[in-house]
Every structure is written in C-alpha cells, then in structure tokens.
Image (tube, rainbow over all chains, first blue to last red; front, top):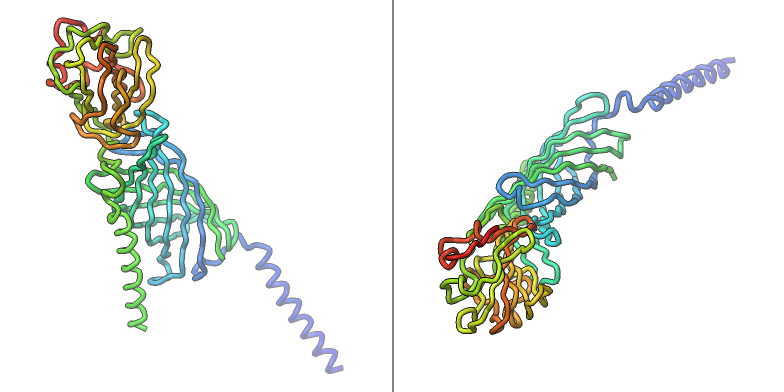
Length: 194
Length: 181
C-alpha cells in the first residue's frame, strides 16, 4: 500500500513537471530567453548603398552585401564584438560601364535592446580599413585605393527563434584618405547562431 | 582574471590596428591616381587638347549643335595639330578605332571626374592605354596630317558643348566662330 501511494505521488509530480515544461515550450516566443549566450553568430545581408555628400552626383547606386561574424564576448557580455566584411558597388556617372567597388573590413561593438516582444534595436560602432577598386572595362591597370573607415550602424532585429533572426539595418560608412566619401545603405539580412 | 581581461583587450586593440592599417597601408598603391581623387563631383576645367595651342579658328568645320555632338576641325597643317595632349588630369577610359564620318584613325577617352569625360578623335596609334593615369598636358598621341579631328566632352554620359567646360587657356583659340549652336 505504501508503495502504491509513493508511486502515485511520484507520477503526479512527474505529470506536474512535464506539464510545466510543456507549458514553457508551448509559448516560447511570448517570453524569449535573453540572448546572453557566448555562442558565435553569423549574419549575412544584402545592401542597397547610396552615396552622400560631395560624391553623391558622381555615382549611381549598385548592389552590395556584407558578412558579419560575431565572436564570443571579450569585454562586457552585453557588448557584442564583431568583424565584418562588406562589398558595395557603385556605377560611375561619367560612363556607367565603369564601376567603383568598396570593400570595408571592420571591427566593432554592438549593443542590443528590446523594443517589444521579439523585436530588438541594435546600435553598432565599427572601425577599420576599406579597399577601393575602380573597375574600367578592358583596363590593363586596376586602380586601387586604401582608406581608413568608420561606421555607425543602427538597426532592428526580429528573433524568429533562439538561433535565427531577421535583421534590417541602415549603416552609415565614412571612408577617409586624401579625400573623403560617405555612403548610407539599406541592409536586410539574417543572423544565425551556432 | 584582471590580467586575462587586459590581455583580451590588448588582442582586440591589436586586431583593430591591423585592420585599420590594412586600408591605410594600401593608400597610393596600384598605378597612378587614387580612384577617390578622380571620381568626385567636380567638373574640372579643360585646357587645350593640342600641344602647340594657338587659334583653332582656321581649322574649324563645325561647332557643337543638336546634330553634331562634337567640335570638328580640318587638320590641314601637320605642324599645328600635331601632338594630342590630355586636356586635364584623369584616367584613360577607352581607346579604339573611330567610327565618325570622315575621320580616320583612333580615338582616346579620358575620365576627369565622376561626371566629366573628354574624347579626341583622329589620332594615330595612341601612346596611352586603358587604365593609364594622365596629367594635364601629357602627350596621348599624334594626329594624322590632313585628316579631320574631333573633340567631344561628356557630362554624366551626355555630350555637351565643350565651351562651358574649358579653361581660359583652352578658350584662347576660340575666336571668330560659334562653338555652340
């Protein structure tokens, strides 16, 4: 008899436990777990850049893209460290068969804050270098430049799950050498956690 | 723990310095001009396209008009229209055999900014190649004696009358004719 009562109590406890677990899994998106994980993340985006300032009339917008790798936090866990490699293409108005390509390689920090439910805001600051390539059809010599580069990148992200998010950003990039150029881009992409 | 964090901070700063120097270290590499010093929004003044300067008037056949997108000259005197030069600093964009009526030989196109390009028609084999950087006054070829020669200016890819884009020196020879109609 004692054994039966013990088994009954255990089974009730088990049911209660599974029920509680089941309840948690049934509504994961309502209360997402804060993302303080140190797991690395990869973000892939495509960009539509637009040149601002004194170079604005020299270029037509082309397409671009970027790959951002968030590596495990080195400093404060709420600051996400990342390295990004971008690729932006602009057509030169002198003749649209000429293109100018910018490849920024940047290191940066990003903070994330919750806006509503699974929607978060992000703000990143990054610095590094850019390569600039002037591509002229049939040219025997490719024109290359190197520039110091800084970037401010506000954005929004929507967590689809703990490992996958849609991101939309608007990075403003400054490239500086003997002269100065800046461009702002509309960026859409996905971020995956390993 | 503190030493460990300091080491991580040092590694991160070192990485940042390395990536920054990656770009700056390449400054000026390649051949000639840095693209950003050429591709700005400016419309630099164009000088003469012949080495000897002087008056173009005696050689004029036609000015710029709706039906004529260039200035056309008769190069009767080889000693005058002999050497073709770059009218402004830029990068050679295109060379080839001309397809304009009554003009034989080659042409050379030079981009002077992100918006401005000049073209010279009626040359012997050019002495420059696509992608070369040229400075104002640099020889780009030799005209054929007795052939016709044309000079064209394009802004944002559209042919315009060259007059508005020429320097005082470039305009010096524009006398006794109507360059734009």
